Length: 147
Image (cartoon, rainbow, N blue to C red; front, side, top):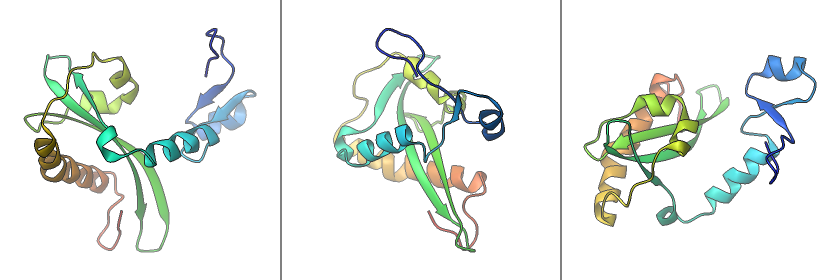
């Protein structure tokens, strides 16, 4: 993290062992106060205000969404994950951008891709099923689990 002058004020890692073994390196996870603050902010933002459109490497326009998914296992364990989905208007995922979600922030923005009703259809017919498949692929959705 940097201050307004660009000077590093905090260093983070998502590697628990590395953070514990290195002085001055904090573990950054979903329960970190900075992350929790941002999650709370975005959870209270109206759905109509969320989302982004970017231009992918091949020139395609894509809708970007980040999902805070909490899955419950049949044993009652809860596992939280932040899932990025990048989907073109034709419904194709751009997994190369999803694997490095910080790259999404460097992509050129593009104007609104779809009208409101088309966005709602894309959410219901493409994005939500892709999210469910991704959570299943990550092993977060078992036979009795929920999210």
